[in-house]
Length: 167
Image 1 (cartoon, rainbow, N blue to C red):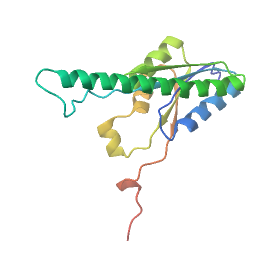
Image 2: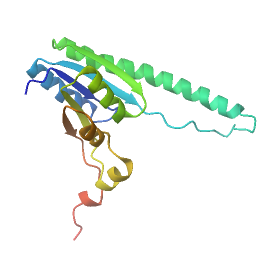
Image 3: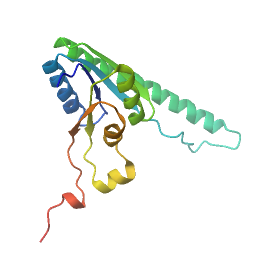
Image 4: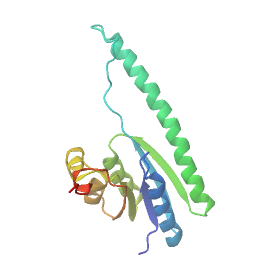
């Protein structure tokens, strides 16, 4: 295979440790560098019950959201630091980064900028219908990065196609 630069994109989900462990194992086997990435998704600013015609409620809501984002960034930095520490403890050169925005776009950007030859991502195991409507970061990555991609399958959601017949 010859992977020397492995980008592992992890979400704050139950699959995160498994996705990271997969990338870590590959990095150790290949003697590769590891780049750990997480993307914070930011929803629209919501106007709470204090919203008014003069915009004071909007300003307050935006300030609250900024505080939430700042706290989230601090938590993510600590979380990613632990992954980097674990890799370095095994002698694997590792760095981390986080961004705010669209995860698929950022993964493609970092893979290109860093020159990754493998991207490891997780897949949440959504039902086909949910994935159709919600999209999929792993699907986006598969179709838009210019290097190899390893998708670590998550647990399947219980959906119609996953249920056993009751008869």
